Image (cartoon, rainbow, N blue to C red):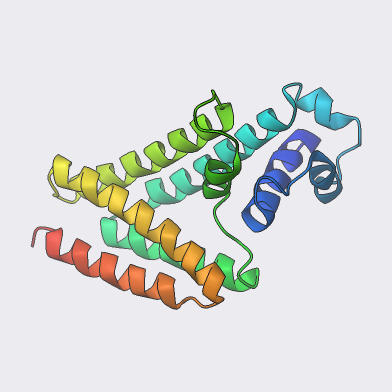
Length: 188
């Protein structure tokens, strides 16, 4: 059984992926999670910024777990793509990446912003896991680092394009191109 706090974090992540960070209010999170009204500031004394930061961490852990479970690079890429495709279709193209949403919607980059910092940490973590998997499959570190950034940027961009077009074609194209690139790089 999950606690009201855990439900609130998961609800925040789900709402952000569909509505964006700016359009996700604490009242919405309370309603979605079924948490008692007074619980928001009890569990998140840092307010909305703390809740958004923890939602980013929740998503970062979820995706990192998927990346870590892949037994090889192709399985990792195929699994991520299947997951993103399924989310797009099941939500009628409303589901994006909550980490992207907070990265682009959480205020001025010149000012200290813990939510944007958390988003940067999430992307770095994912890129490091992708690069580690690529290196485990025989790709040199420098190339693996570059391919990890390319993979993350391409998949995240494809999700945005798919949402806008209300079609998985951009995701399917990016998946095919990344798979071709990966197959060409993997030692035989």
